[in-house]
Image (cartoon, rainbow, N blue to C red):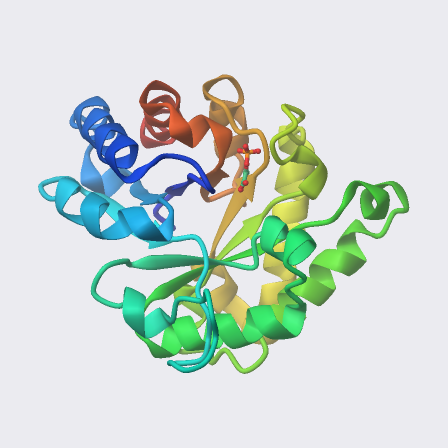
Length: 253
Ligand code: PEP
């Protein structure tokens, strides 16, 4: 019912030329994967987007950005507008935990960005997830409920299926300590239940990714779970062999 979706978040890695090399390697590694079996995106740094875009030609791999600002233009030094990305990317990651934790992004800002991405005709990947302290304090569901609710304010029923939600427990990101597949499934099912409260059965059309130390070794088990519709992959997305193995794990299911 939902096409699985694997996205690679390259973060602040790869020069422009390194990014193009990685794309060439990915195209070769993924050439046998039927496009209908899985949606794939890579999200390089802003400066690499216009070089990666033509390098992706002839493949089914889509392009995403890692962030954007919601204002259309103006005195916002260092920011990139969604309009500037239109025609280049299909997806924009919004509210990654590194944006929230290092750059102070709030649920309200995340919501403005999600709405602006949708208004531009692009597709947001909205990241949510609890810290280790919140997890250990038993606050995970409260955090996920708040982030889901506040991030989706004023997203219309007509647009909700355009949103991908990435559940990324912050303690699992870049640590090599992924959530167990059962825990990840339970959290993703909880998030879907939150979406269902507001949008009813449209929740069944919303893709919910798991992110946090996904590797070729754990991808198959995580992605076999019914409410996990794919993965947002950080570290393993920087190696063509690892990223393609994750994609193939879901494409084979
Ligand atoms: C991420 O940053 O979105 C992420 C999931 O990173 P990693 O796969 O490296 O844990």
